[in-house]
Length: 210
Image (cartoon, rainbow, N blue to C red; front, side):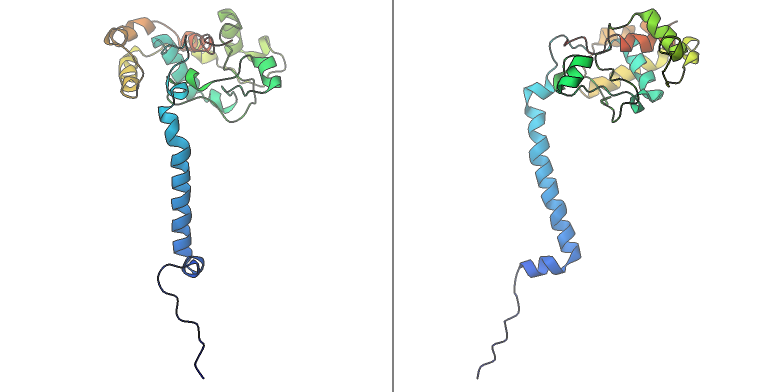
């Protein structure tokens, strides 16, 4: 009688994958990488995600300084800048956010939670004076607010020396700053407080779409 033992598996087989932890991990990572590229790469060539919405301009020097202060103080930890296309959100905050509004944001300030309200369309909603009072002591305008006060911003001047290098760095990643804008940046923020810069940034948020 012949011996009916199964012959040894040769070449690439499911058994080899299923019995090798290392090979299984490598193949999983490979599939995830390919899937990620298929999802992400087309976005770099899609006009709706790479072209600015009409009315969206690069931040001027004051607004850019304010944005840097917004990031430095961790405002994104409590405030999002991403209005989702849900009725409850658009009724409260305005038009939902679209990709073309963020083409000049490096990095994006979408946030991940809302201890405070979304700020994507806060521009023009309140006066500069309201923002000044709110930053000095939020309870003066919103009694139930748990936001910390930032009184030092009113007395801290913006550093003009960092603006031109900052704008040059952004130009390398596609923000279309001109040489004239970069050369004038230091003079634009000279003598201005960090509070004024932050307010300038807040007042320009979300004005392109309403």
